[in-house]
Length: 212
Ligand SMILES: Nc1nc2c(c(=O)[nH]1)N[C@H]1C(S)=C(S)[C@@H](COP(=O)(O)O)O[C@H]1N2
Ligand SMILES: [Mo]
Image 1 (cartoon, rainbow, N blue to C red):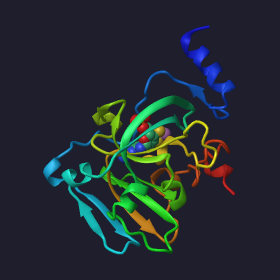
Image 2: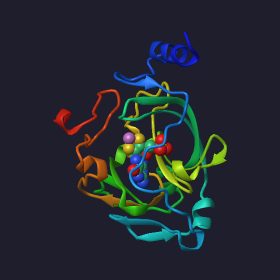
Image 3: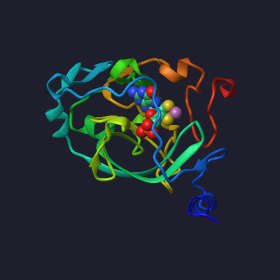
């Protein structure tokens, strides 16, 4: 057996490979449109919607926030999974506890807004989990442009943590520029184009025809 099949078998046995997924040892690149440039002086991170105060952080302000490292398994709806990916960035929990975001009580959903209009929605409880990160680094290095430099949402599964909502990787927006907090749900780019609104990997919530 080759390395990939061997690793895939191990991950299956460990219960870390959801139904319908196969393991990749590479890191595929998937997105709609072109890779945008980063212009530090004109970059801002917007916090808006149902918050006490709408704000905007500069790149330096964002980088000054306390950072967290998370090891996660990521699962793409196109059926590849990659295990033990190491990310560093800021959790939404940290944004809240650092006072950078004051979420109103009736908030139920958060929408990631990215360059070129890409959006994706998550329930607020999912986004507040340890498995959702606003990441600046992958594997100890700043993100590659293709993987979302300078900032992206990352959602995955933390092995052994059955209390979290593990969603497909499209729900991590690359080239992230802001978060919108809402008291109602607002489907994003792929969610409007036929992907499942929730996208839980263990329930195989891939497409809208599987939605209830
Ligand atoms: N801004 C933006 N973010 C995006 C996408 C996109 O098209 N635009 N595609 C999503 C999809 S469908 C996937 S599977 C992952 C892929 O991330 P990767 O290229 O780092 O593997 O990014 C997600 N985030
Ligand atoms: Mo995807």
